[in-house]
Length: 547
Image (cartoon, rainbow, N blue to C red; front, side, top):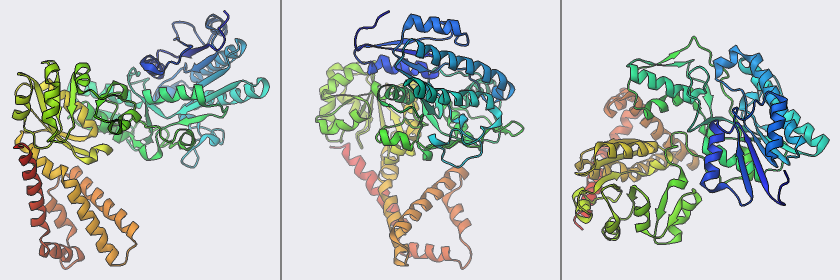
């Protein structure tokens, strides 16, 4: 089959798996370029361990480019049990795919490796130069060595034939269409399946191992976009790590806690320490990726709720919309267009602007819409008066730490918003931090406490640091440790569930430094001033509803 000049035919092996399905979705959502023909195949199309079947598939498709995802994969305990099978089957698959690609004249192949290929005993963070520096962890050495050999083959095809065969090394992938088998799946889908069974059966959730090992997780649709970039733009034979930053690494315990929170599981969580932890950590550097794509935005681990391309944002000027475009959202200058194309609509305008915006969109609002107001002080009754009868309305009050997924958000629903409406909004907002449904009377109080409270806490942090600066500490160090003190104290209060007075008492010793400092704060009226600040901000929020 001859190809028209300049045409590109891309064959994706393992096309029905987690990453393959993600690439299909990204291509379908607009990543396909003119002249590109994408072909996704699975084990139903050919047994890639069989050289003849693999060659027949490649002769039929005649790809110019290949993304090679197909592999025998499994979780930790399956790897431990079947190391020989993982070695032999993956060696056959990889050799058959790479050689068939070579024989049909494919110009480029991008294969998928894994961070498990790196040496067990190494320094961190690991990078692309360290793949062959020592043996991998013994738990999955068969799979690891088979994947390493792809890198060896890629270099050999380039040296002997000049072909650009390369590979990517993603960290732990999560997202839609994963394998949720407890025995064979990876850590997150396995935890989700276990949590589902525990919740359904009213039993404890048992996590295998101590929970201490640490992993970096990359969202499958982020990885899909990076795969496509590597296919089109990355010209090196040396592999490249595709990963979130080192600072985004989480423990298995933290991953389990995220699953528990997402699935609203309230049962006991236990750790079976008789089970192996596997490799303790595989912290990977994405420094090489960042030299190419310094501004690539990863989906946060606790997010993954809505894809950016499914968000439509409106604003009067391009200056207001450039941030949304940078995130991959769709944009428009028409508020009516947003309402006509979206069932769930957030109104994040200034309070004095909101009535005019609601008047503009009211003609296209139906009972199918869920409208959520972020405007401070605008009551539910006012919102319902400005909109058609029976409109489903909610109010929310977020705060600034939502941008780092540590926010405090409250919501209240109007007369026509149901429990499912509230649950939908809650599910979306919990990705931003802690979200609670409250009576409407508490929304303005929350604005004074948590919305304006961010500025109050910053003022206290600044004063705390300036006190240390006055006593001789360098400014940068003082401000960092003031912020860390606030962060650590907040974690203690939330994790232990203690009243602040109890923790304060625990820190004080008779005649010690802390009680003298607290006395100085009381003389300065800190407590009364803080209470007055929350009251003033709350009252100001309530004033908006009268305007």
